[in-house]
Image (tube, rainbow, N blue to C red):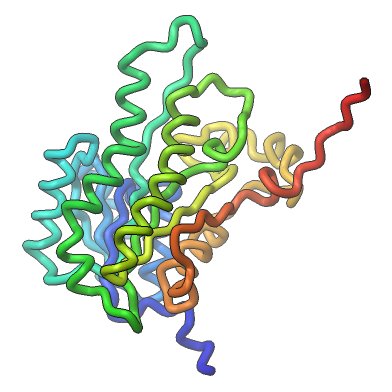
Length: 262
């Protein structure tokens, strides 16, 4: 058993949506360090270019807005113009919306559900041919959906569509995996907890306070997210299908709540 290659991604091609910042950039950086060629995509051309420059020659900027089906198809065409196959797709682009129940707007529902649930499905559909071209029984292609612990449990934020979208994405991961495993494409999900990012401003701006509510005693670091994604994307994760890996320092599975006395 040669464990030195279990977590390597040498020669593989990956696409990370929302890859210019936050969790997406953490994953992209980890993939590049593990030997992959990585396309990073987001709405911001400048942010993509900045990330690609920072991560080196094996990181390529491919800006696109995947909030619509048309955008998903356009990104798939852009990848196909550059590559004949795609080994790894990370559906990370996402949005959140917080507002009280009585005033929560339809636009806050539709924006979040479209980007967090609809887009991962239709982007994967649009890239199905390239993923199949890379996939084989001894080395499956990988689709990694970035969900959230907010799809696994409640929190105090009134982010109704975000909670619903991430729970839906977790189940969509299972359903997609049942179809795509026949093409030797493994679909899995990562459920991050508190990682400093523009979306998670509490972890970014008040990390010490947030850490007090985490069993591990700290917020997540870029290496934590990169390692989990590399595991699923590499040979190490080839036998993991349809599952969601929770990366949260124990918030979901190791938090003890107080007993409620009758």
